[in-house]
Length: 228
Image 1 (cartoon, one colour):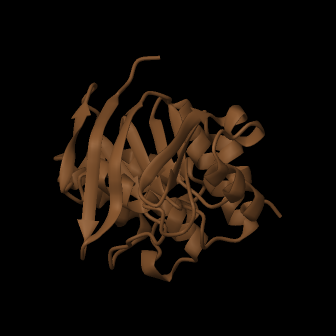
Image 2 (image 1 turned 135 degrees about the horizontal axis):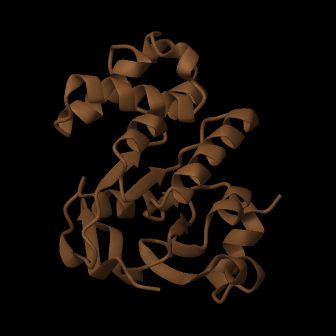
């Protein structure tokens, strides 16, 4: 499996505290989930990879330059309609108005929200907003989709729908890199697990191996605490 991102001794400190420390790994799997306790550095690592934060040390080397999109736990909705929210990202990419409208409408259909195209995005439910955010990202046809706790605030039905959409995006050929606290979700989506604890990468392994035979005490303790 060819790698697409090489991370070498990556670090970031805030107020003298290591948020991410000496992270070295290569990402290659089509679907990678980052797990770890609260405050472990999961979201910070994703923001460093996406370029929203700049590392204090180390480097990221893109072995395959990839177009990217990122979706957050709390989706950012513009003060406009659901359809126009999706069109906005395509406008930034330089697409002409007819193409923007066509691709935005197709994206809304793919996430099952074509009926709310004209509704104000900020008045939609949390689950609908997250699906609009996914549609906005999907319309850009990214080669890498980064997801930071995409279902953390959603009810079970909305969570299932978001997982379905993520699965379809992955099936279209887009690489998935995401964080979650939902272990069942990690099992359903991931091919590879990265486990981070106190800013350091503790394990990087296949999903089945992580859940059946974790190699470190930190990972074993995490699974015991997080499993109902």
